[in-house]
Every structure is written in C-alpha cells, then in structure tokens.
Amino acid sequence: MHRQSPTSYVEHNPRHPDQQEPPHPCRLNAFAFSPEPSLQWCSAAPDSVAPWPPPEPGSEGDLTPACVSRKPQLAVQLAESTSRFAWMLRSWMRPHFLDEDFLQRAEARYERFLRLRAAHPRVALVPAADIALLWHTHLGLSGEYEAACAEWLGPEAGPWEPEYLSLERGRMVVAYGMTAALYERMYDEPYSGPDTAWLPDMEHFPLLSPTNPLAFAAGRAFREFPLPDSETALRAAEMHLALCGGSVARLFPVGGREPPRSGAHALYAAWLTAEACGRFFDDYTCRRCCFTRSWSIRVATVERAAMVLVAIAHLRYLVDSSSHPFLLAITLRKGLWKPELFEEQQQQQRREEEHQQRLQERPSGGMRSMSGMAAHPAAAGRSSRSLGRSESQLSGMFAGSGFRTADPEAFVDHPSMAGLTALLESCAASKAPSMMRGGHKMQKHQTTPPLPRGVAPLWAILGAQGYAERPRKLFEYLWRGAVARGVASVMTYGEEELFYPHR
Image (tube, rainbow, N blue to C red; front, side, top):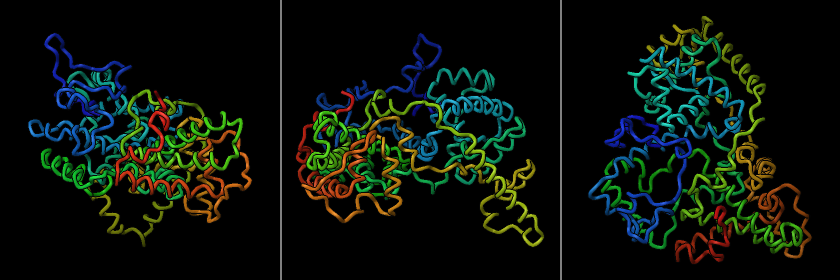
C-alpha cells in the first residue's frame, strides 16, 4: 500500500549510504506478506505478544501507549489509501478480470495510457478499471515502475502519482470523460465499455445480498467485536483516537458508520465456512464414503459454520499470509471473459446514448435541465463538447457490467465454492434469505436424500429443507457467550481441530 504513493515511499525509505537508489522489492517479495513480527513491532510490543491476530483493545498487547511518543502518521496515511481502494476492488472482483486474454489486452491499453500521459502531462487522466488494475499493480513493483516512467514519460518527470484518487467524485467523472475523448482521438478505439468501466455505487457484490445463505452473520462478524468488557475496549479505542489525532478519528469513528466494503469480506467468509464444514463432513463420513445421510453429521456440519463466523469476529482464521489457500485459489484462467457478451451490452448502451442525444437536440428539449447543469459544470461541458463527447458519455465511467449470481463461485477456483451459485439462485427465486425460509423442521429420523456429486457439503445441506435455521440460532447463542465469557469459552472444539487451513 505504501508503494502506491511513490513520493511518500521514497521519503519514508531513505537511501542507504552506499546506495544511489531507495530500497525496491524484487518481484517475488513485492506482494508477499506473513504474520512474522517486524523490527518495529518487536521494539514496541511486549515479548509475549504476537502481531497477529492483533491484540484486543485495552489488553496487555495494546500498543496505544506507544503512540504517545510517536504518532502513527504513516499508518494513518496508509489507512486512508486502503479505504480508497474499496470501490475499486469491487469492480476488479468481476471474474473476467482474472481472464488471461482480458489482462493481456489490458496490458496493451495500459501502455497506451502511459503514452497518453506523455502527450498530455498537464491533464488529469483517470484510468478505466482494467487500466487501473495494471497501473496499481505496476506501482507495487516500485523499481520497475520508476524505470518505466523514466522511459515513457522522460527522465525528468519522476514516477507518476495516481493523483486521480484524490479527486472529488464529480470532478473524477468529468476527467474520465476527458480522458476517454483524448484516448479515442489518439488511438481511434473505444476507451470505455461494459467490461472496462467501473461499477456504479448501487451495484453490490452478490454475497452482500440478504439472500446470501450466510447473511445472518457474515457482515456482523466483520463489523462488530464481541468482548466480555466492551466498556474497557471502548475507552481504549477512544484514548487511541485522542492520541493519534483527528485524522484517525475520521477513518475509524467509534460507534460510527461502517467502513466501505467491496464484498471481498463476504467472499472470504463463504469460502472459509465452506472449507471448514467440508473438512468436518469428510472426516466424519470417511471422505463421503459412509454415513453421508446421517442427520446428526449434517447438523453438526452446518453448526460448524456458526463457530467459524464467531471466530472471524475475533480476527481468527483471517488471511495472514500471501501463501494462504484462499489467495492461491484466485488464479488466472481462460474462458472467464466473453467479449461478444460485452459487445452486445456496449451496442445497447450506444443506442441508448444516441436516443438520449436526439431527445436533447429537439427544439422542445433543447434547454437542458438544472439537474444536468449541476452534474456537469458549464466549463467542463464546453470542454467535453469541443472533443465530441456528450454529457451522457461523461457518465460512462460507472457504466460497467454488473455482477452475476455465478460470479462468487467463478472468482474463487476452489471445490469449497462448488454449488454456491445454485443455492444463491434458489434463495433469490424464493425472495427470502436461505436462513429464514422453510418453516418445516427436519426430524431426526426422517429420510434424507443423498448429497449431489460435485457440490460442497455446506451448500448442499443448506439447500435441503430443515437445516438452514440451525446455524443462525447457534451463531446468536455463541455470540452472546463470547460477549459474556470470551471467545475461548464458546469454542467447543480446539482451534487445531476447528480449522487450520494452511498449517
């Protein structure tokens, strides 16, 4: 995250006396991370406190007192950068952003984008979503990025900062339209389309829908932090804000609004619970060779999901390494991008734009509405029309193709996601959350159908009648127990047995 701002990265990483350049990571280490303690952590934290999971507020390992002598200004800057990436990550979570052919085309478009910068160094250029993915990945390779900027933009230009991130939303939309006009004039090809434009704010990841089978807990597990002594934690958090300054208070308001979410947290919660439940089911059914219709085993399997979700709220089992199996399951593949589908959407979008333009050119509709004037200032409107761009085209920045129900299963290439699409479609068809539908209760000795082949046990069991209510009730019970007595008291299984995916 720090390397996303080349200037700040160089300032906070001074050159070694024997070196001419600041420290740049190699490709193998540029995006790697692990829970191993850093030298800075070891100098501030007690010897017995590990950096991960983060110590609870007010506990022995809380590093709030260390902030008295040195305020975490860099940490605040990095947190601000992180919060900006939520709306960007949401667009990148469409599966075709993992397609090899799509990314190969994006790389060529990114090179053209750099040439466009060299031709218009004083214009604020805003990238399309595919170009932005390549740009911010390139920024992570700080040494290679610095050399590329010197080659494409000139040795005196310095590394190009992504200044568009600091633009107000309205100005960003106008600048995006100007960028599209310049790009299309220079290369005579479309700049923005349904597959490359950003998603609008109202487009949510499918697992953020109330029909998500884990909606009863997935959001709460990442939003709240159940502690036996919540008042002590609240006072510790307030003291932290006072010591660190107002910038932290704006980022992390105590009891304030939820931070922006892309939907990646719900995707990980779905994978984690399905993986834990699948391991449990396989262990107790001899890898699905016997007792697969057992009522008690199926109930215990879906109840395991509640335990995992409560553990997530205590920052357990989160991704703590770049070699985590969840990250390894997000792989580049072919066949995820179907250009013909996006071309149909783009043609439809062009027809709508032409229709809107004809309506505006009519004598009776020649006067633009005040709402249109407010959305696009007069100066920006004149500049855009001079480049042949209509106001409807300026809004194309957030005209990306929306999510499909199958996207979560397609994005993570792992057996634990198999069958999630069918369950989501079933829940959406019933127009009710899976955890709430079906008043009929499964009886202990009732005959149960076999699980379908190729489907993860959790999604198959939740799709059957009578099981969906049990994990929701157990989650509420375990949550109250964690608040009253601590999370260790409600885990009926040891952590090693409950779920350790990468150890």
